Image (cartoon, rainbow, N blue to C red; front, top):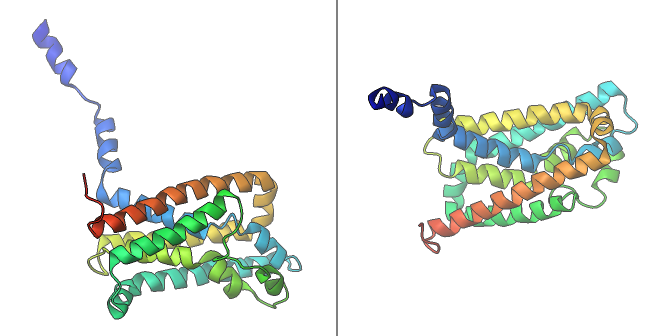
Length: 237
């Protein structure tokens, strides 16, 4: 009887095992890190009030065009820094640990502002919305840069690109995929900004921004710790 029960006790659920292998796979973990860090920093939901103020005089078709231009600008800027990241490091003699620490500090400041449900000055300065509302087309500046592709998002992309061994490596594909997905969602959110705000409400948007800010602060501290560890100041356990 004991011999009959032994195989049953050793049996494991194949689906659970496969799910655990997927969850711990390097490509999955890195892709989730890339997507979360880039999406939280682009943060299209926090840009909804400014976008509606800028496009207050526009019809629905023009709003969609400006949202598309802003998302495309964001993609071009972030993808360019992703592809040129290694060259920039070598050109200016910047080490990855130094950029991890600097990027972590920038992310921390942005995350602290998000915890208070407000836009960071690195993404939107005082008067930007009013100036953009007077422009004929604000899709590129300030919507695309710096409201979506601001210093925080660029820093995050640069930190992610730092350890990538080659342009054709799968990690580069994961970073570009995360950028593309973030920009696509940003277009959907901004193009339907009125409906999103009506559905979520101002309170719902502020809650979401605060949650993303909390996660961003944790991510910033991880970047900071990684930089100190790479410099040898903190010893890995």
